[in-house]
Image 1 (cartoon, one colour):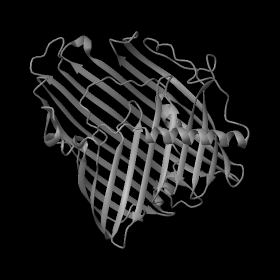
Image 2: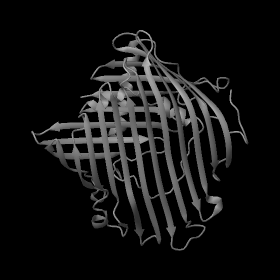
Image 3: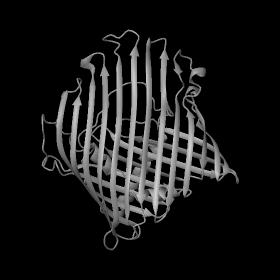
Image 4: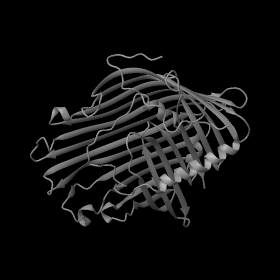
Length: 434
């Protein structure tokens, strides 16, 4: 059941992707699926475009949209809270998740980290990360040459074929990433050689810079804290060829705090993320063809949860999530303005049921209210003001090998549209350690 106010939403699309059935019943089929998914994930990672890879401050102003159920989709594609402990304790690994958001778009997130000691006081590290929800996110890559013991100083950055895209910087840290206490500050000059190497007359004033603070504290059976704060400083792109000024600034805060001292494998925690970007495009002579544009882009959520054993070989996770997405573009011509805002409050439950040492079922249920506001003059539905009740069921199978591999295949089902469609889509997750 769903309630609506104001006008109705546009018709919802059909099943995402080719029609199919739920999770495979036999292990042979699952292994075939595992091979296909790993191939797809690795293909996506290796094919990621490096252009503008280090700098998320793309100056183009363009509209982004989310639909009413997308926060439920995104939550269904996240890993369990307890899975991250194994991830952060390992020096080398890859984790990835891919799931359907619509008939046209996937949610895709992956992370790779590698570390090798070259001596007692020298190490080499590499990291790669992408997290694409409402748009294809630039692939972030960082190589690090680390010196020291206990306290560390590092040279960081990453080369590109086009030297104008090179990034370079430095970092100071206490502890390694896998230590019980890890604190790191880094400064990165993005597109560091742009002004010197660019053959076009465009110039940055000042050059793009990112400051980052990472804090991780892990005390088994007591507490787990992970905080990551990034700030991209305000920068301006000047282009004499096109008489306009483009501006950008951005910041992103995310973190997790879990209390583990309750005993019996219980967890009580909170996770959050707050991302904000501002852009401006200011022509010297605004007109109908050269508009003055301003964009505010926000993605934020807070997740409260608890997890605890429930019977022999079973575990429950219960949580409350509040999320908000907002893309607003203001223009010197009113009919060219755009706005998409999605606010969702949902409750969810996850039930893990172990089959044997390697296999387990994972059932999920999410339900909540979504409020969607849209002002889009290019859409067949230029004005949308709707409140809907969304519900989603997930059925998945997990293969685990402690310290080596975790693979999760999940199929989701729309409960609020059961009279129109049943199967909603699917999600694959993989976590590997080298």
